[in-house]
Image 1 (cartoon, helix red, strand yellow):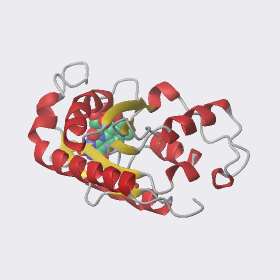
Image 2 (image 1 turned 180 degrees about the vertical axis):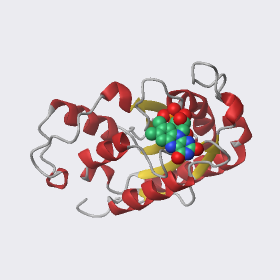
Image 3 (image 1 turned 180 degrees about the horizontal axis):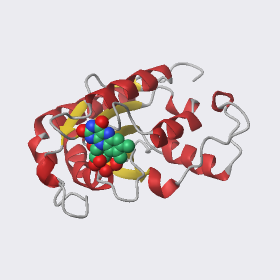
Length: 202
Ligand SMILES: Cc1cc2nc3c(=O)[nH]c(=O)nc-3n(C[C@H](O)[C@H](O)[C@H](O)COP(=O)(O)O)c2cc1C
């Protein structure tokens, strides 16, 4: 968590881990807009780099008894943030298994964490089904989600011959109004949290 003199820290979690993907490019283009509109610092967590195995903790995450080194690293990454943005593609009408796995590794770390969901998809949709499914799970684990997901539609011609985006910035720019509104809401939530009186004995 940031100190009282620092700007709060938002971490963008890149939910796609494929070797050839576009999520990392979208995250990089999204980060400065999120930072500007929320007033927070923004860092990116790449689940591909973290390379979590399928959940291998012996105890239930809700017990808070993390044992594996990769779980401890992942837990610290989330704990250091004041808020998180889940950036998810849509695969077959849902969100990626790697992202569900990463969510399931932790429990208390998510509790009341301010959060925003940004989904993306092709063929005229912005990954709405993926975002809706993710919202249901994140509500269950207790994140403090801002209302409304941001949905980014990737035009067919955004991909190059290598299946990477030729340029992610126009995609972010063409959705700038909803992105800014959601980031402002997240920033307001962070400011309210910082100003809230600390309960006696907390
Ligand atoms: C497993 C898988 C399933 C997909 N299913 C759909 C789909 O149902 N509808 C669609 O429009 N695109 C679908 N796509 C295309 C993705 O929207 C596109 O590949 C996008 O770049 C995925 O994000 P990523 O590159 O960051 O992983 C699918 C891609 C993958 C890898």
